[in-house]
Length: 233
Ligand SMILES: *Cc1c(COP(=O)(O)O)cnc(C)c1O
Image 1 (cartoon, rainbow, N blue to C red):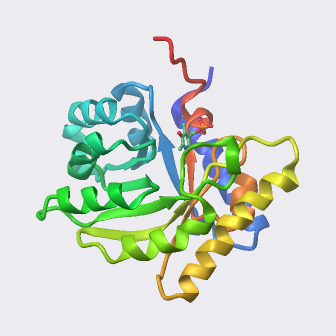
Image 2 (cartoon, protein in one colour):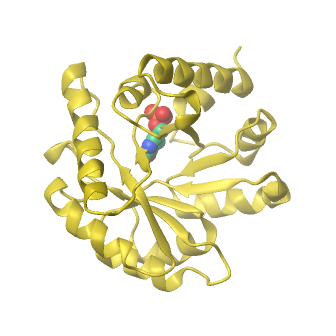
């Protein structure tokens, strides 16, 4: 029997070990607990174990869960939207999340900017880049990322923080690392162009060590914290 608290402790230890191996301070990597498909009770357990930032993929599921957990708002819960975003869902995201990692076209960013309530802090945004070519449909093409990033950075009510990527699972670890390197180099180039990006959102349960080695500042971890997801229930 493992508990969410024990799993969180193990994931934090993995992050710390990988950071140290990469010559980086462990505090330089944030942990986003991906709670999609898991009930509010699971989030509550993670909060009791000290976790504050949670990632969700499905807008309505997340909004319902956050409402159930509204009593915990004083603990400083932070909701991150990390799933594919359709234009008819942007308003709910703009009104209910602190971060969006999956902006991959200007139209979506413009809607989020227009719909972000003025009494909330600016929405923290990452641009999702398709680092695996045709293997994945989500994310903008790497050669379009710079144009999109500069346009998003100019929008009101949003704050562009960095880039997000989801490499396809690869047997070949050097291929996998090359996807993370691509994202880091893109970030470095955008910073050379003056964008001041502080976030590289990359690495999940199975590849967080490789991602941290290549500069991840935020890892998105679901299975290693909450267990295998069951999509049929
Ligand atoms: C589900 C998901 C994760 C978490 O994946 P695990 O393999 O369960 O750690 C991370 N990022 C995104 C975008 C996801 O959709």
